[in-house]
Structure formats: structure tokens, C-alpha cells
Length: 351
Length: 72
Image (cartoon, rainbow over all chains, first blue to last red; front, side):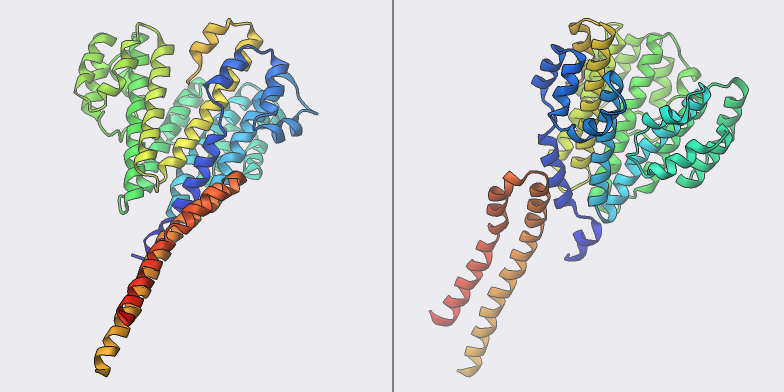
């Protein structure tokens, strides 16, 4: 009994820390204010509300939209690293496994950057060193000459192997889609394999990840269906390991004649009631669907973090909220810079 | 008579000891959470301290029981 939590992880400390951090995230009113501002005003506003350090560090080198984007990413990476370094035991293992998604994100950025001939400095500025790979390791990847070397080195660093068929498909058409898709599938496969169900926090974590896979699969299937794609062309993008959307149901949804037919098949899901509203809003608009699914995912994280405060879920809940805050700031800044009207920008925000 | 007094002393010791262990277990998580919150927001110090000391009441109950066993 005494050793239960000491060996398991410092849940109380980290949960309280992230809950305190979460209170300093921007609220709906802050987004409303930013929508009324110009780009320099947004820079000043975020520079006064939690992003001071990063804005000060980067202001001498870059400006405008680039300054906002890099400062927000850098701030997010620091926040995640700080939580990861404060955690211990199985909590650290779970967080570290979850944050591998940023390593994969960084690999995608490097590969895309190299493919389009971007220089190392501009690729580096788009990296988010929030995962297991620190800046030094990412620099090593950046210094590699060919994509093959980058993928092989990444595989060595992360102890994973990108399927040869994905690499061959990339070589054949020069399109990164197959590799990116394979990396996403590998990430979730490894995440599920790395957590057994030996303790309640681990069980909750796995449950949450499987729900996340369901959300991603459903979003993918419905988006592809909206585009008129069906059958095996949809199934190759489906990630295995979901909680409710298994292979059989995924195939059924993929083969449905239309989006509305697929939506009818969803009525058997436990979480249908929760996503009904998001699906109802899907009147051919992908924007509403994606925002609706994101809201559902946030709602799940929020609910789980309240139900199980001494688990990894409050940490993930904070990470999701922080990521959304950064995305929202970037959407507002990009939208205003491009001259998009305020209402359209507001519709793109996840609040 | 001496044996009875010995049993009472053991009972009193257990009352304080077990209550102390319970308090320790309760305070362990409360204090860790309080430190976590204070590192992010120093203004939480006052509230956090109240939650940290709340489990102390349990050991006081144990102490009261121990006194009652021995003196009442």
C-alpha cells in the first residue's frame, strides 16, 4: 500500500501543477479581444499574457506573423518539457510516450522542409522540441543530407522502424503522404503497446488513447466520405486500436453510400449522444465537423481529468488545451494577416 | 493490574501511531499537490497551506483517544 504511488509516479504534484498552469490559459474573452486587434497589437497582447519570455527572445530576429508563430510554439514546447521533467515513474513514461507525437511532427516538418528545399534555419524555426528528442537531436536530423538517412536516424533515436512499403511508396512518387500516415499509425500502435493495464492510471490512459483513436478515425472517415472517397481507399487511413470503432464498424462506415448513411451507422456507438450535435452541424461543412470532433475530444479530456485527478489525464487535458490555445492564436494572427473577415476566423477557432 | 496498564499503554500507542500513519499518507499527496500549485502560482500559498494541515486533525483525534485511554 505504501509503495503504490511512490513507484507509480508523482501524480498529486504534477496534476496540481498542470491545473495551476491551466488557469493561466487564455479564455474566450481573450480570443474575442484579439479578433479586434491588428497584428502588432496581437504581438503586444500575447507578449503581456504568458508569452513574454519567448517574444523577448525572438523579437530581435523576426517580426510580424513569424514572431507570433515561433514564440507560441517555443512557449508550448517549454511548457510540455517542464511538465515532463517534473514527472516521475510511470507518469513520466506515459507522458513521454504521448509526447512522441511531437517527435513525429518534427520529423514530418524536417522531411517536408527538405523536400521543398527550405534551408536548415527556417526548418529549425518550425520545430517544436516538446517530445523526447531535444534540440541537439533534432539538429542532428536536420544535418542529414538525404530523406533516407533522416528516417533511418529517427528510427534509431526512437527505436521504431518505418515500414519499408511506406518508404518505397515515397520513393516512387516523392509524396510524403504514405510515410506520414505510417508514422501516425506507428505512434498509436506503440503508445498502446507501451502501456499495460496493470494499474488504474495506466488503464485510464489506455482507455483515453483508444477513445482518441476513435475520434481520429471517425473524423478521417467522415472527411474522406465528404470528398466522395469510400471502401479500401478510406480503410488504409484508419488507425487500429480504437475502443468502439473496430475494423468491422470502420469498414461498414467506409463502405456507406453517403455521409448521412455513415452517420446512421454511428447510432450504435456509446459516444453517439456526445457527438450527435457535431455530426448534426455537418451539413457538408468539414470545418464544423472537425471543430465538433475537437470539442468532443476536449470534453472527454476535461471529464476524465475531473473524474480521475490522480492520473495522467489532467496532464493530457492541459496539453490539449495548451495546443488549442496556440492553434487559436495562430489562426487569429494568420487570418488577420490574410485579411479574412472576423466572423470566418471566429468560426475556425475551437473555443 | 500491571498487565492491564501495559495493554492500555499499547492501545494508546497504537491510537497515536496509526493516526500518525494515516495523517502522513493524507499529507503526502496534499503537500505534493500544494507544492505543485505554489510553484506555478505563489498566491496560492495560503489556501494550499490550509489543505496541507487539514489531515493533522486525524493525529489530534488519535492523541485525544490515547489520553482518554490512559487517564479516563
